[in-house]
Image (tube, rainbow, N blue to C red):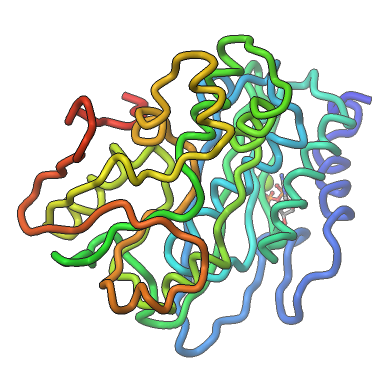
Length: 318
Ligand code: ADP
Ligand code: MG
């Protein structure tokens, strides 16, 4: 059945029925607003992101499960980037009428899989038809202890610059998709990193608790994202390009296709790993996997030590 037959309210009811019971004290889908309790000594974190067909994803390539996953994941990643705990999400979309209910069910399976991982139930949204493209807007809510939110502006000279996970995999996956290249083995894993990034929520909370001075998630590539931290903090940085964490999969596919793996790690984007700064003595207590890639220095420039070019812009929409 296509969603035209289901109708707006039929679809909303289907979405509501798919959500399990909510944590005590929270009211989600069904009324004019969701209702959440407020905790003393905590701050609310809110973030929103839009995913537009043709700009952020190709509807003819991405499977609905992955699209649902990615829609929730890129938003939950923003809560992770503050060191916060997710509370829930809101999903507004404009749907082309040709989508069928099987497609919607698969979309929500993906959406709920990552929401479940992060304990962030779907609490509401909005549903309209679209004359042409699919447009998805997700808003996430989270919380953190008052004063414990990790901003982009706290980096200080001497702090170490670190990242979680490996960089450039998602960009490698996108190259395979756009180039119509084979997707077996290592290629498959790169595409999975592109389509189903895992928000580093638990890691973000550990990094915050350990004393990070600045943090953000890597959506446009560190070539552009590190600049946000240095600008906001009024500092410079030195990055040792040889120390960037690269996966076996990215290295093998780069060797095969002649890609510049380190270039992808810097400017590729959509890694959704965490980029953070921390004094070295605090870093000794950090008990999650991470890689130190450089140091914050006085000034305002970023030196990409060992890179063929100093011009790094990451991904830009305009
Ligand atoms: P309103 O007219 O107040 O906007 P709606 O009929 O659009 O109400 O929505 C009814 C309920 O269903 C609300 O609780 C809303 O948050 C929820 N809802 C609508 N669309 C979605 C969606 N795509 N995902 C989750 N909840 C939704
Ligand atoms: Mg509405």
